[in-house]
Image: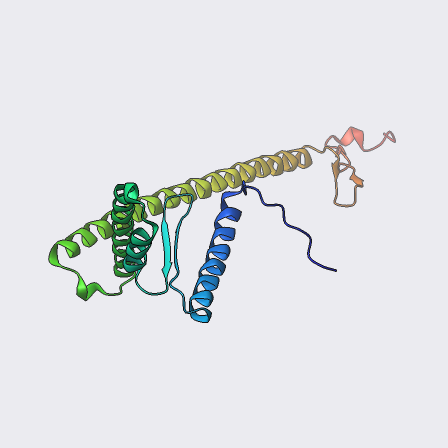
Amino acid sequence: MGRGKIEIKRIESTTNRQVTFSKRRSGLFKKAKEISILCASDVAVIVFNSTGRLFDFASSSMKRILERYRNTSGRGVWNNEYEQMLSQFRNLKKENEELQKELSCVTGENVETLAPKQLDYLEENLVLAAKKVRERKTEVLKYERRKTESKVIGLQQKQSILMELLAHAENHEEYGFTVSNSEGQTTPPPAFRVQPSQPNLQGSGH
């Protein structure tokens, strides 16, 4: 059986949309590279995702291909738009490179390439991040301590109740009340006997 036809419409789930974009973008760039090699063609692809992040592919030089397109198309009125787009492209590419460099530095890579000001900026960010981690750790520890204290109080209350019940049961046994044993049987109180203390109570013979 063949694969079912996929309906082409906007993907509502942000996560699924990002995953699909990543897969389709890779496939698009792969096809562009293949056609440039197989057909000896100059190919350029520019893609912006939904958050405005730039992704691009060029079989040779992106600038040269765009210049060639502008000259070949003969669209003089497009020059301003082209310049703006090219400027935006350069800025986004530079910003992306800076972010990649900053990320690699945070993970401990390429620190030796940073200037003193960049090192100061990185140090400030790391100090701030460490402060946030400590604050979060303190919150978690406080929560765990409160939870443990609550458990201890609950156990102490249970112990106090059990001690009261035990003392109550012992008092019942002392005064001769029936007390149920572990098998559910009642033990009668000990017999109460009066011992004769007067001689005339010994008998009626005299």
